[in-house]
Image (cartoon, rainbow, N blue to C red; front, side, top):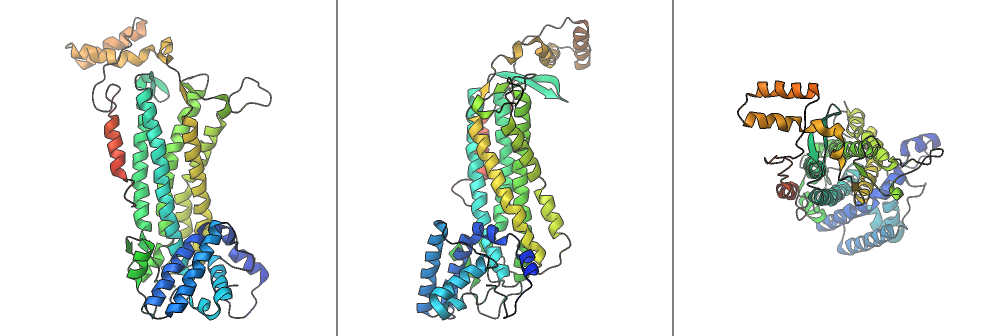
Length: 432
């Protein structure tokens, strides 16, 4: 069944090419299409297109279809082009003439938009919650290991003292920036496009304020052309938020891969979270984090893929936009998996408490020694030259104690301030 079918028979190759994998992707979205169809049916009843009996019957069958979807017993088979045609077919099969009325005053264009935006709203809240779980774990690890020092690097050269408290909470605070972008994407998605029909509105007196409230949108995309132009834009905006999360995860995964190597030896994981070699029995490879790094690096290209797909499209609907789902939906699943495996693994992380016993890290303390000379009254440039001379002659003897007290430093991690910052970024009690 095709909603645009006028009675002819389309070319089989054309049909296969244009449908692509939409049926599989729509299995993810079909529950949201039912949700939107329910609000639409109530609205059609409100404005007199459906009589009360038809409205009740359609709502009853939509509820049954929703139960079948939850039970994974509502497949979108090959004869159907997409979720919209399957739902309309089922309503017509079950209800007869009343089922044929469900498409009144809407188009597949606003149908797919509203289903996708309802889906993205839920997914973005889910990402916020997954990040919050990882954030809380990182903050707990920062508190637990706050005083254990490790080397800080610039240019991959030994630089200054850092700590596991700094390292764990650095990534925790960086995730707050990602949450800001996810919340912005949520607000873009939180605008009801239903009622824009094919992109130019309808001669039916649809009540868009009613469906906006019924589906829980904060507002509607008022201009019907702007609503249709949201297709592609809401996906790109979401992709920017996902890519930001992926960038943070990828960088942390890279740190972990370095820190696990024998040359660093800063942290380790149980054998169950590493892999071996087919010929080297001593290997404990960080495959898990290498794959997180790789998947997240690919995800960082998602906004560009969507931008290239939608670049230079004029206003109105174009079939190009169908392909946004095939890019975005798998990316969402990949990022979920990366967040979940990272969180699970970090619960078992082991830190090396004696890293700085190695003399290769003695020079970490040269800056603190230089600063001590300045605090005693020596001009900075003279202190710098004196310290450089001590290092060059091999006479530098570090005092391996840190006296950093300013906000955000080794001795003042500001963990509570970071927690409050996350709370304010997107409070759990506020959807968007």
